Length: 376
Image (cartoon, rainbow, N blue to C red):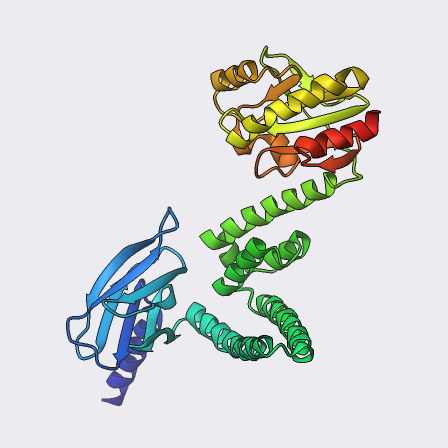
């Protein structure tokens, strides 16, 4: 019998080891007074950055479950009908266990898979620091109400130290967990907050595992870092005292016009558009300054962020804009706007005769005063 049983045991063990899960299973527990058949909804963030439903389950004695096949690890959210808040988990292949109190869904315990174990570890460590921040903030409010300046100053310094400590903690956590989706998400948040320079963020991204880089979050993060690098370079290149970056584009007649070709003793680069009401309202002021100082050496080149050629040409005629005009008809995707890091209009750059930026975004009287100072 032993000779027969032992091979069977070995075969069964081998089959069990090779039976890796092909999909996910979420086994959830809700503690507290939760009625049977309460709806539980699994959601994710959709294309329009809005939650979309993925699946629905119903409670039975506080238990519920979901199952399916994920494409790759991705943040998901669990909402419970008539309860406030939600629980966060990373949907991935394997058995995910989630347990929460009905009155504190955001404090759910999630475990069972690699990504959720890393995510839970991060949350546990970060929550301790968040509680310290809340305590300092509470004491700061009391000190402010009592006008205790010494305590306010001390607590403000303590809060700054904690913020730096928190930033360092997240950077080190990313480095220590290159295979964690949470690491890519932390980099993404740092890109949005601009708390860390793009160069450092790129190094953190380079340290991520190939699997995380291939994840949708990883790919999105790389694009955002690249965009941030471009913006940081543009900010540096268009700061006061910097040489204005050269550019060229077509004028309304289809002829290529460059910045260098229109430089005067003083030159204004004016970003505007026909659809921009503040721009159109400012055009008469710019026109008045141009007429008054053009003969003394003021030149202007308008860079339109229009999309419609007819609207652009019509606005030039209606506002009687007499200076050089160019446009790529590309809205805020315009390469010149990106080069100058223009995210809102009107925007303007005033240059000296050498093409060096000497002032930004002057309007109305401020523009005329500066031009008069330079040319009179």
